[in-house]
Image (tube, rainbow over all chains, first blue to last red; front, side, top):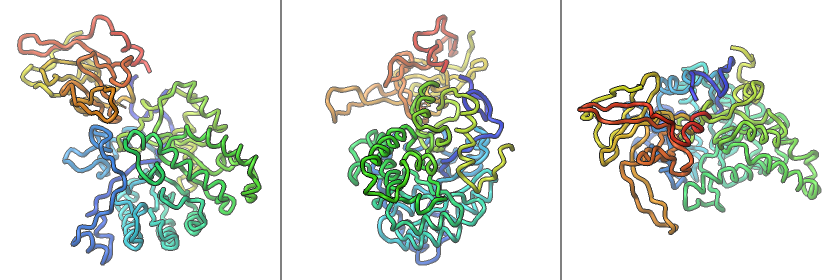
Length: 365
Length: 132
Ligand code: FES
């Protein structure tokens, strides 16, 4: 298998690739200039750092990152735009890359102290715009919010959401499942700002609010955290109330989706009376409103991959994502089976273009 | 095809090196015990550059859940991306799936030089794995 620059499996893509999950890395000192006091002082004087949830940092040779993505001067992977440009955007011919950043600090997954989380989210958004979105025309961004305070989160979406390069609101997976009406102000703000909502796996507890003993168990079960969220969105009628809302589920892959759609349809046939605001099959709602990233990809033959899409009943629901620079990065050539040209075009480009109304909508460069 | 790639003194036990062999990039190295090995530098999973990985040991298979015993120090090549382990003393076999192995090259010492050459016959498993 020979990899040529800017190719997907089976050859180059004239449009280039849209990558829906790129992690730029921020360090606490980067955020300090964007914070007012007292928040700034809590970091500079008191050494405040966010608590971490995930009890594992060891999965592979360089922890949670690709070993070849650390900077030669020792700075962490994803922290330098020039390096990210050459290793990812140029090397893989990325036309548009959606930044999903903020994992540490991650204001959206903080427990308690909502005011600090809200301040951090604003600082992060301002930093992201100035240091990434306005420095490379290919990069588009996510509005980070402190969802613990939905009113403040909606104000933040209204503040930075209109920026031309902000294309989505990133929602944490946390202890209130997202179908809850508590979150409606956030959905309303996303909808009125023409933004997709997206959910990255972050650090969900997958065992009854806790973590399993081994990383391999947790990583295997990330899709269960996403299944809960998708089920909640669908049956709580979020898309009935916000009919223009589109959701991208990031970093749990897509192989769980045929099972979940089939299961929800069956339950709906039996139990529709409990959720009378749902007026069509759940699978139709999913097909219309929800998209799923490819990463982390299982290994597929060409035939197996097509079979899975057949089960989805649509070729338009799956969008390429690399998860650069994390250890479970997927390469657009090495990570994918061969596929028909028309399908390749959809997975690596067109499906994401159709999802994000704020991306320039021309199909040619 | 045969090519001198470096002096033996330039490749210490426990070290990994990327070298160009004709048009192919190879990862060569020496185990902790000094034994030489040479493989294609492209991981057979998704193509990561293996020379950016780690030469290390691993936890031995065991019948006892909860038991860790770190073995084979300096004999296991771990990929820099998804961390798959390849046993350099067993022809580059993938430790989690021994039917698969890295593309392997012959490597030997001639005087002070380290020499790499293609194997006479591809070993079982290699061809299938390289033609994804
Ligand atoms: S590319 Fe080597 S383990 Fe995935």
